[in-house]
Image (cartoon, rainbow, N blue to C red; front, side):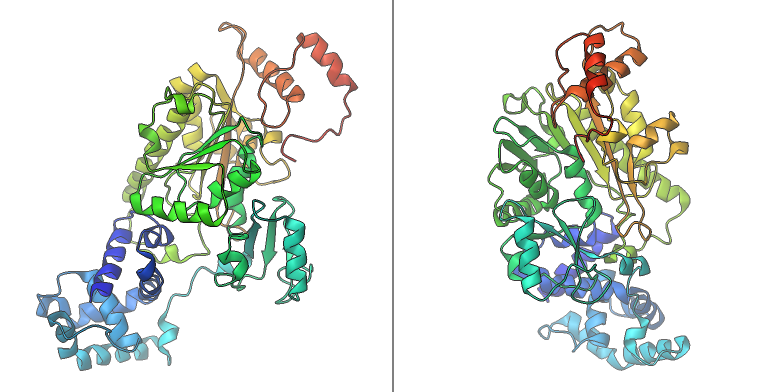
Length: 486
């Protein structure tokens, strides 16, 4: 029965919006995780039907020993849709068995009313937009090269013909160099390449934050991933850094921290130091972090952009506009705190803030509030120019949601169903050098442009020489020079 209690508690946490399905399940002990995940997901698929059975039969009113509605849901699922309740003969199981005939009868009546022949026809099976999203596989270059990975898949019978051409087709992504695309229903969870850490199952949009941050791959680099678990973005940062320098990975939740540690070990991340602490409690004056130059922020969000998992099954449809606004504003307040705290680190040069949300409240609005903050003014932070934020990606921020519409060009958006990804948002803040506090804003912007023209990847320092000298040098450069990211 403990297994059912655990599944009921997962549903309690999901009802309380304490995380996504994947995130909450990741905190469970390894030995129970797979079985609990299966029951939770299947219960959610049939939740509306199961609730109707419970309410119609008044089971919870008649059986006072069953005090948890979510516990009742998982038990009812196994009674009606599986091989029965897999537990010893305790009082709670007996309570269900006393009403077994009545519960089955009501379930059959629901099928008749809805005109379905099979129980599976009652299930909610997911967002149809998920069918347009390939199975993305990121090659973990900490273990091997993308060329080696491609040849390995070809040797298995795959062909570079695209993920939607046939079941054995795959492709290399046009925006993320180490990302491969496979048909949506391709399974890799038991594949030796996945189990050994050579490939990471990660949505394309989720790869954008680390790629936009693009920390320098050198021994002196010091980088922070502020909300690291379960570790996909952390392992991506580590790979981009060629396992050089130091990458601090923060996770405040103890169980999720354990998941992070396992992921980093599996992905062969040798330059990462996981830290079981809340990033907001870390002092920017700590000597360990005085040389941090790049920070990745991917804090808790509404998850409203995720369509290729079952979080859309969670009960939010009954949420009023006021309740939704209150929830989003609370999340936005926390997200803004994270950005402002990151801006206090004395040596930080680039901060990437991302969410898997489609709401402007958590995206454009948070960004413009951050730009107006004392921390941004004192630290001289502004949005990175669009050419430093994956310029080949065409979908940008919402101009109507920004005080300065032109700033939207510096923001990345992914639209579920349209971009073959989940919904996502990415922004990048950069610190510019100021010669004088009295320097006009437009002059400072011109100076930043001059600095960017002469800077190498990950280097925000201005090149030597006067502005006029730099302009002369710029005229000698070719018009089609490549950007730092592309």
